[in-house]
Image (cartoon, helix red, strand yellow):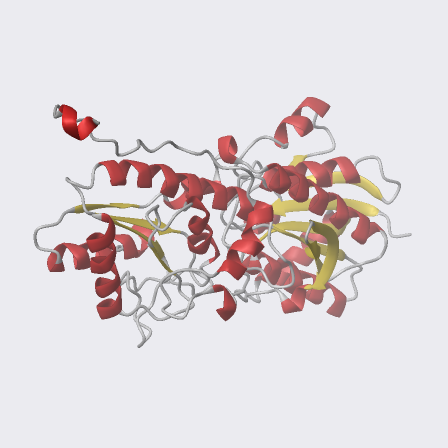
Length: 408
């Protein structure tokens, strides 16, 4: 039996449900014979190297329970990319605090961090159980059907597009187009999810563009004009990572983060939504419109959290502890889709090396041939993850007339 302390950290962008995983790790680890104490990294691996730890074993039951319904990253997050000089220091801290169980909650860059730490310790002969816990709003993690955080972020975007669409429909004599931007550097899962806002062809969104397909400006403008001709307005959803065929970002963003990922939004100095809005504004001379960019707001919207998301985040945290104390290491907890009708899921595991620094794209079958919307196959994938959405009323077009003969 391997005995020692456990440490847990959170990395990358937060999600609405990431603290549910943290709460589960604490509850599952505290009191176990194998784990003497549970520490929390303050601001991820950066805090770890500075020996900045919170005493998670000393947290009250009320705190742990409250974490399950608290958004963002309670421990504080980090986007530090490990360099070779970091590893001796990490091993020094592991030994100093007798840490034998190492958990990180995050996305593919986070899985790269835990994979490299676990691999280094094995090479140096230090016994460490490293297990990753999935988290991402982008849903771009390999080895798992979906990631905790995605369903709630999807719901948040869907509600934004749904309600903004009702507004835009009724304001179409003023604004003829609406462009909404979702997070999604390399994958269009969140953009595609917005299709669930539509109950009929005239509902928002009319057009959806994902980074898996090159953006064609001429075809886009043709499709937008057709929607305006049909409905009097057009709702467009774009993913932040859209690229032209030559690889140029539609956002025109050029700056990179520490993991060599293109930065979008305010950090990148440009945005897809703004540039697509400009395209429409330049071509549709007599039309005007809006662009909307919620950015990180969808990462921390507890009022829109999905129950399945909260529950699965919790289950992933508990499963990570179970795997570690049973001898597993170098793996990430995964969610497997067992059945589709009725849908059911179960916990699984996947090697960290197959997850680290890779982005899971939307399968080609999930995007239509034109590249401007998702397919029914994608909607079938999404529906089990998003609970019932509000339905809004449209007035019947019964026109009033003072001509009695016409009324008869």
